[in-house]
Structures are given as C-alpha cells and as structure tokens.
Image (cartoon, rainbow, N blue to C red; front, top):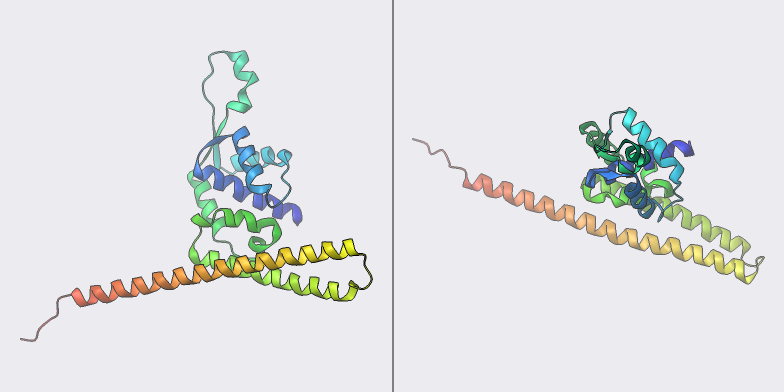
Length: 211
C-alpha cells in the first residue's frame, strides 16, 4: 500500500513539473529533489521506472534530438532525452488534481498536492486543507495525551523533543487555519461578484412592455 501511495505521489510530481515545461532527466531529477525532498525522502532510483511507466501509458513522450556522431549519441543518449507531457498526460494530471481524499492530505502526499494548488480547483484546495487540518488535530490530541502520560517518567531531553514535535504540529495547524480562512474569503468574494454580475445582466435585459 505504501509503495502504491509513493508511486502516486511521484506520478503527480512528474506530470505536474512536465506540465510547466518539458525537461530532460537530469533537470527533472533536480526539480523533484527540491519538490519532494522538502516533504519525503526521494529516491533517484524510483524516477526512471516511473518515467518508463508513464511512457508505456502514453502520458509522456521522449524527444530525442538528432546526433550526427553516433558514438557521442550513444554516450549521451539518456542525458539528451527531453520528456514532454501528452494530451493524455494533461488529462491524467487534471484527474489527479481533483482527488481530495485522505491520500492528498497525509504526510506522503500533502506537500506535492499543495505545490500544484495553482492548478487545482478552489473547492478541491479547500477540502484538502480541511482534511489536513483534521488529521493534524487528531495528531495533536494523541501527542498531548502521550505527553500527559509520560511527562514524569522521561528525561529532560526526551521531554524537549516531545514538546518540539507538539509545537511543530501546532504551528502547522495555525498555518492551515490562515490558509483556510483566506480560501473561504476568496470563494465568498468570487460568489458575491458572480451574483452581482448576474444581477446586472438581468437589469440590463430589455423589458417586454404590454401593448
């Protein structure tokens, strides 16, 4: 199950980055390390099997530039390959970006989903943020209960470590509260603007006068 979750996160990350621009393997590796390394351990060995599967599924294609020197071409073949998103790949990316279930707010997947929020529908963004907050609030209760049970039995360093973990979760919950508040305010503003435009359109429509 964990392997499938990891593969799904990597698929989303690769498709999302290639949606921004085509890349060769080395550049893609660097971008993935920056993106995924902030949230989870990223294994370079998992990238090329993922690319191979995406190629087999028709979600990406390889662009191989012509090399006049055959020996040089064989030597630098992999480094010169540029990966591009296909129409099916764009469709698959949109499908992944609409998913707002537990996998999107767990530690494994939240950061990657959040990285592509600019391409995600507002209602999906809000569900993911609220799901993440709910999960962390559950974690807070568990950590606080553990602290209450063990506070008198652990040494000062272990206690400091536990407090540090508690403070980290509390900070993220506060951050999520701010994001959720902004998302809701923006959605309410857009709804009011839409209602105003609809009202103005109705007022501008010619009225049928009785003869």
